[in-house]
Structures are given as structure tokens and as C-alpha cells.
Amino acid sequence: MGHVNRLWKTSVVVIALVATTAACGNNETSKTRNATMVAGTACTKAGQVTKVSKVSVVCAKTPNSNIWYATISARGKSVACTTPGNVRKKKAVVWVCGLAKGKKLWQATAPLPPKVLEASSNSLPALPILLPTLESTDVATPAQPVVADNGSLDDTKNVDQTATTTTPVTSTPAATSPDTTVPFQPVSIVSWATTGPYPIGIAIDKAGNIYTANDGANNVTKITPTGESTILGKTGNSPIGIAIDNDGNIYTANTGANNVTKITPNGTSTILASTGSGPYGIAIDNDGNIYTTNYLAGTVSKITPNGTSTILGTTGSAPFGIAIDNAGNIYTANYQSNNVSKITPNGTSTILGYAGSGPIGIAIDNAGNIYTTDYFSCTISKITPNGTSAILASTDGGPIGISIDNAGNIYTANYQSNNVSKITPNGTSTILASTGSNPFRIAIDKDGNIYTTNYSSNTVSKITTR
Image (tube, rainbow, N blue to C red; front, side):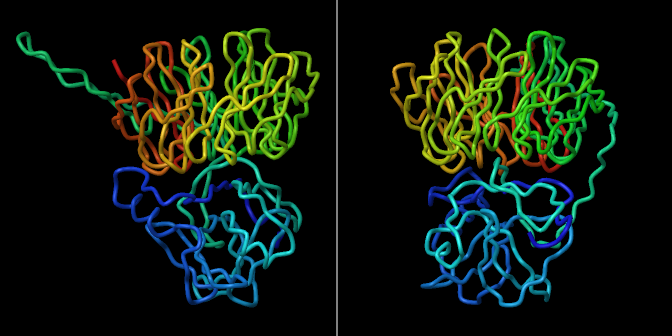
């Protein structure tokens, strides 16, 4: 997702909120957002900052006309500018001078179209942007996506980066009488456990402990099956992906540091190895090798258990999600090129099939079918092992995380609509339950309970399904 020192205290990541005119989700906010925020929608007052369906936007000057674009909610000091509507660029982040609360402040924006970029000094790929903690006047390069309900540059959010303990809240399904059978309804404990600031990645070990990668604090939270939460260990800058090996070691893909952290079960943290540029997704094969999708480089890194790192193969543009099948083939969801790459264990790379708009999450079922969450089109794509591609079902607004249960049901964490969708193998889609604010990733334990990391509320939700 620079203009002053320490501009942000924590990472904030953003996706361009509307790359399609199709309405995502069933609520009016989603429909209005997608109808209004189409790339190229004109505005008249250069530099004006307002909100469209709760999304902050700024009117940017272009060579031909003025265009509305979504802004990133930046936390920390405001940055002054002089000419409303002016566009500038610093290391792949485009800024617009906007009038916010009576002040002229630089607004960091989501990716802009080519005619806006012509007004800046360099070209910008149409990719999500990462804004990590800054210690100088430089803005970091793009990395991993999150969608934010954006505000102006002087927004603030207080976060507590200390370890926390929470008492789980219990909820009981509807009772049944001897002569009446009531179908079980999913029970959602929205704030089941707390995490460090801005949790993104989630993983579950064999004992049922849940781990989250906390982008805002550069650490990992461990949550016991009863909901007790502690900080397990530190990571590199901006941990996004997280995975666990058979020995219980935790690994994080550190987007801001281009490396992988290893944390032992007792909390000892080390940097295991470097990766390609912009590591996001992370997965581990049966031999303990670690793989990361490198979003900025369009590659996959392979790291052996002893820390030897190599580039295994190339992908489509902006690979985010990663999954491994039983034969050791690697699959990546390529966000910008709307397709899925397959990389064999020996490094042969091909495009397996195509997805909906903005594929981010990826998962594989027991039959080897690949599924992606398509953020912009609010759909689930299914790609068979031979590459046949189809849209399986729709979801609610902004699906990112994806997981599959033993029966082949698919679950998605819907970032914009704060809920989880359930899609049956035949494509029937329903809203399963609500979550905390901005659910990002999703995981299922051995008992079928579903968990989401809630990026904006610093919590994990638990949904009981049986």
C-alpha cells in the first residue's frame, strides 16, 4: 500500500476498491460503492476529499479531466501540500494534494489509471499498495492487499502491542425438545480472542492452537483452543503469510523485509532466509520446504529447512495466494493477471487456468481442484487439474481468505461485508455468519470450527458449525 519521518506507526495496506462495475455483495453499500467508484468517474473540484459509501475519495488532477480515487487511511502525522489536486509519486505510491478538514494534505491513493500516471514522474503498476513504518522520507514499495474503509491522512488509530489474554465468550445453539428436531445453526463468537495489531495470516497446529501474523506489530499471536491469547515471538517487518511445519515451528512471510521468520514452539525467533521481492503467501510441503509468493517479483521462492533459498519459478503478475497439492506442485493466485500459475517441483511454470477479477486467496480440494477468491468480482473460481476454468459461485463483498472442509465446502472471509460465505461443492452460496471488522484470512480446525483474522478489530472470530 515519503513525506515526513515516522509518517505511519503501523502498516496499512489497500486494494483499489473498484476495478469492475459489477456489484459485490448483497448490501446497498456494496452496490453503491461499485456503481460510483468506477475508474474514470469525473469530479469537478480538484483536491476535494469526501466519502462515497463510507470510502474516502480525493479529486485528482489529470491531463484531460479530474477523477475521483479512493485514498489510503494513513496513521500518524499529516503532510502539507500546496496545490489541491496535484499528483506526485514516491517509490510507486501515488499521492494527491487534497483539502482535508480545512488543510491541504497529501492523500496516498489506490492505484490510478494511466492518464493520471502521465501527470507523475514514473509509471505505477496497477497493484495493491503497502505503506509500512517509515523512518525516512521514502515510501516503501507496493506489497500486500487489504481493503480499508479509508480516511484522510490525519486519521489515527490507537493500538496496544502488548500480549493480551481474553476470556472466551460462550454461546449455546437453540435447544431441542424430545419430539422436535431443530437444525443446528452456526454460532459465531465475533470477538472470540484478541491478537496483536492488524492480524492478517492465520494457521492452526495439531493441538488446535491458532496463530496470527500481526502486520501492525511485527509479531505472532498464539491463541489456545480455549481462547487465551499471548504474543509468541517477533517477526521481520510486515508479516503477512503464516504457516506451520510438522514439528510445530511457525514461519511468516515478511513483506516489508523480503524474508521469512522461523519461530520455534517455545517462542525463539530467527530470520530463516531471504526471499524474492514482496513475499506474501507462504506454504510448506511434506518435506518441510517453505515456499513464498513474491508479489513484486512475480516469482516463488523455495527455502529448504536449513535456510537455503532459491527462486523456484515464475508466476503471473502479482502472485498472492499459494497452495501445494499432494504431488508437490505449487499453485499461485495472480492478482493482477487474473489467472493461476502451476509450478512443478522441478520449477517448470505454466498458466493453469483463469479466474475472476482480482484473485487473492487459493485452496485445493481432495480431488485436486483449485479455487480462488476473486476480490473485485466477488466470486469463487474453480479450476480443474486439467485447467478447465469456471465461476463456481458468488460471495459477499470483498472475499480474500479461503478454506475448504473435509466435505468439500468452501468458506471465504469477506473483507468488505464482515462475514463468511459458505459455498457447497455444487456452487450453492450462503452467508454463514458474521465476523469482526474486516476479516482477512480464514482457517478450519479438525473439529470443523472456522476462524477468521479481523484486521480492523484486532481479533479472531470463531464460528461453530456442528
